[in-house]
Image (cartoon, rainbow, N blue to C red; front, side, top):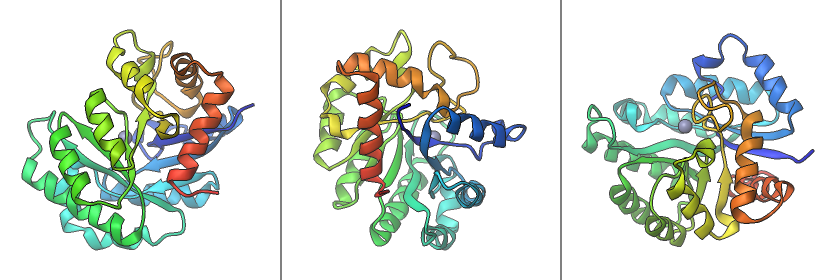
Length: 254
Ligand SMILES: [Zn+2]
């Protein structure tokens, strides 16, 4: 069985409240050897930390999603405290989301920059969420030279991908690549250097075909990796090994 690294999961999500332990057992049986659990709110940083302490193979990204940008600004010291934990491997997920009208852009940019600053001082990579905000995301990335990371669930263009690659970033791909209408993501995937590709679930969301619509978990990465190997013209084993190595490199896990 090939080792799998799920570079972006949310096992702290309430969607797993009923059967979290069983799911975590199930994914281990399916060959998932490493998981980066990404927090999204202040509260979820603490549940993520609990998971990291309970399970050896779960690591943490600590930070606040643009949806809760104001919370991040008001709790910067809490984020800083938790980033000194041994299993803190990244700052995330942070970024910009211009899809929802309700999130104030100014506050988002401020919160994003504050957390990029934390990543720089802790010498940690970042996990970036960017939705319909690529220009501004790139500007912030360029402002924080030396900080590296991943653009998770990548939905941008080939051109923008080239720009972030120049800054040393990786791109993460979810089950979306198995969807029929995934032309754009496939085109980007094909254009990338192989050492910059990560695989992720973003579970409980983004479930790949043929399970689209169900709750997602890391055992379904099998389908995403299958599709990825097809696109990259490599074997399934090679795709698993490649993405495992890339994520271990970025998040500095030996
Ligand atoms: Zn996420």
